Length: 243
Image (cartoon, rainbow, N blue to C red; front, side):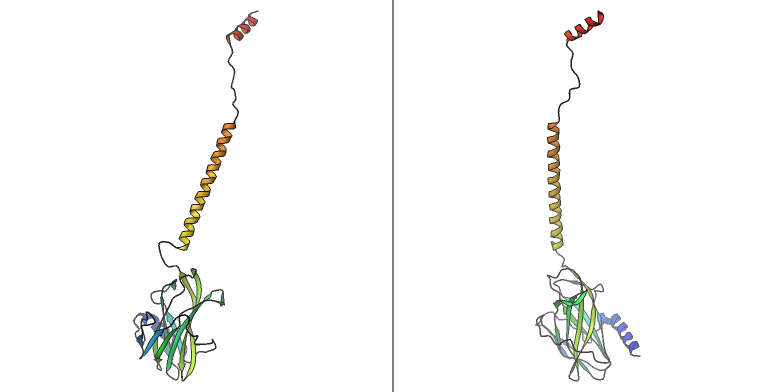
């Protein structure tokens, strides 16, 4: 029965994510806040205090889902803000209070290799009552110096029930980091430089080959095809033949 309820919740959330306004808000900077279920949403930087030691477990009856709005391919531009919606469904025994959402970036082949600690987004008085679904936004940005490629994103939501902390991993999967578009990129500069170097080497090789061919032509000996007979030689030959 629980699986069916969660499946139904997941389907409804995916279909209605763009219009869910229960706890939907937009956060732009650390100074701006917005109302979230009677509370406030704040954003702190990457150097914020870690809220968990990784030992917290999830609470019974609390399920989470995620949606990358307008970004099903999960393409994250380096240095630019990206948005992730986290849906929570509370079918536990008490009202839960959302404390924060955080995420980390890892190498896909080894999660022990931490690439970046992403923004910790704290919530104040953001509650999800029993039998209620709520949506929370998570705004993050990967480093603009990060090399484009595939990375694993691990996102967790930390919440409190009856003064006990819990956490749910709402996303543990791959994202594709791409480079910000611009007139010049690292790859384009490298390709242009490589092309110029190859053209220069080809020109030097062609010049050297032409020089060697020219020297061989100058050194070639002259070949005489034949000699010109004088009139005296012809006369002597004719006299011998007549006699």
